[in-house]
Amino acid sequence: MTDATPDITVTVLGSGTCVPSLERSACALLLATGGLRLLLDAGPGTMRRLLENGTRIHEVTHLLLSHFHPDHSGELVPFLFANKYPDSSLRQTPLTLGGGKGLRRFFSALQGAYGSWIDLGSAMRPLMEWDSPAGDACQFGPVGLSTAPMAHNPESLAYRVTGPGGGSVVYSGDTDLNDALVTLARDADLLVCEAALPDAHKVPGHLTPSEAGRIAARAGVRRLMLTHFYPECERANMAAECRRTYSGPLILAHDLLTVVVGARR
Image (cartoon, rainbow, N blue to C red; front, top):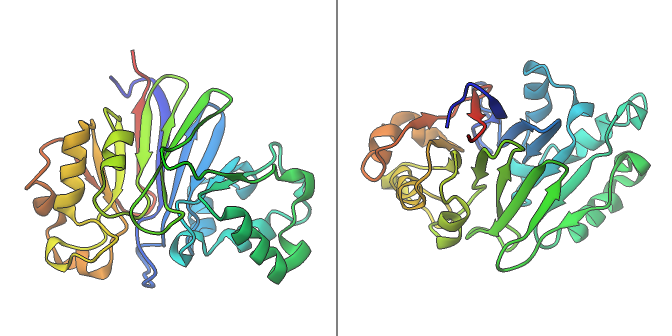
């Protein structure tokens, strides 16, 4: 595998959490591949980071939520509202909104609060809700998508995106240790995995660096990126903790970091 022929361009739009930070926006990841731009999660600060990355909101073709916690979905409503200015005809491709079990109920509740202000009409496709216990798979043109349920919220999903050249990126969302993430990430070119807190501050429903490293090692991923850092992470040696269980190429996420995944040959 080489990055000489780009297949998926991965940009970290938010590497932080619900805790306000000038350096780290809340969770969001942008994947550009096969002529599509997939936004994985949309925490507060996402649209500003999109602009700083040179991406217009109307260029986002898919918005896929890992779960509904505000630090992952809090900018969904402002994003939809902004797409209506001056009108949604600026979109060349209708927006696809996807997520886990309960997405339709979640969106219906938002519509009850905001009404037509988040209605994009024909500029938005029907919602895609994935809730199979074994995971789901679909195709968006030349781009493949697979999901797997995670150990966090009932609707929590991890996503695997496969580019037209065969490169693959897995995004864990929030999760505790689970075999489903190992299976989904098997032989992936890049695993973007939450490591919310250092090992000494382990909490249920989240991973630590050594746990993320254990998943990456078991899955045989080619590169691991840790993200979703609470303030405690800034005072810990996150890389050293991950190295207890993982010896491969390691990246610590920061906002606007870009990583290119090359096409498989």
